[in-house]
Image (cartoon, rainbow, N blue to C red; front, side):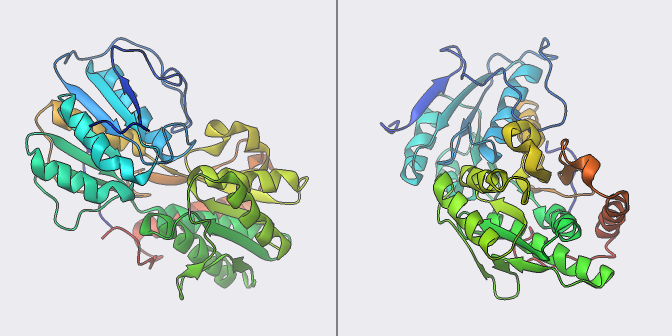
Amino acid sequence: MKTTGRIAALAAISVLVLAGCGDRPDDDNDNGSSDQASESSEPTESNPDFKACMVSDSGGFDDKSFNQTSYKGLTDAVDQLGIEKAELESQTDSDYPDNLKAMVGEDCNAIVTVGFKLAAATDASAKQNPKIDYAIVDSVPEKPLPNVRGLAFDTAQSSFLAGYLAAGSTETGSVGTFGGIEIPTVTIFMDGYWEGVQYYNEQNDTDVKVLGWDEESQKGTFTQDFENKSKGQNSAQSLIAQGADVIFPVAGPAGLGGLQAAKDSGGDVKAIWVDTDGCVSAEEYCDVLLGSVVKGMDVAVTDAIADSVHDEFDNKTYVGTLENDGTDLTLGSDLEGDIDQDLKDQLEQVKEDIISGKIEITSPSSPK
């Protein structure tokens, strides 16, 4: 288990928002990336000549998921460090190179890219601009350039807890999951969830089944995108029709369709959200959420920018774990009282055993 110290051209279809030209509509809104809302305060530092920039993936900054949480890291850096910012919201995957070129043209000192799919474009831009510091969320560069830091999260650990929670909560004996696109940063959640259910079965002499994913064969259900909520809803409804009464969507905004399917069940189906605390970022679905697998992407982004501001930036990949609070399982605020205390106690013990190494998680997608 890796731990670290603090983390520490423009395409016509892209939306450019520059500091000084007006704030994004949601700049002042808490987006669910932490339990405590940010309070407005004067920056503790003043670095007006430093500009930090961000490029989203095609999910956009209002995805109620990892783009939104990462964007909060940028705005927190502005608030804490007294810096300038600029950002570009990608509409399609083909936007990435042009969006990065546009950010370079904005004289950015540090550029954060959000998502595994931006890896190639980030690497190419970093090679061409060695004086700019780059950080990429949800990526582990195999041979990182001196100016590129990966920000990764071992969500197999926290998803293991989610699987254990789901298995301990099901009334039908079947739980389900589906992904967006079949990439490691998606299947890592599904692996952990699957393993958590198997461990619950071992510990409690049960036979809860996982629908939608099999870690051993690495095959399962995917919407093939992250944006289409109807596809997410259809995937969830298919799992529900097969008997699943707890759904774990790992599909960004498309996963909101899975939450809608749970809500439409009239209380028969529950769900577990990913990336952010769904009871904050998607509060309209809190009444069906057993919990959320959260990733501290906002903190990782803020710390990477701070390291760049303070000339302490390096290319050592940050890996968020249960041990360093980079990822965790939070219980849903509406349903926490309905979860048996014995199951909560078991979850705490399982978490301790994962941190100590007593429980070994074997997802092939875990950051190495």
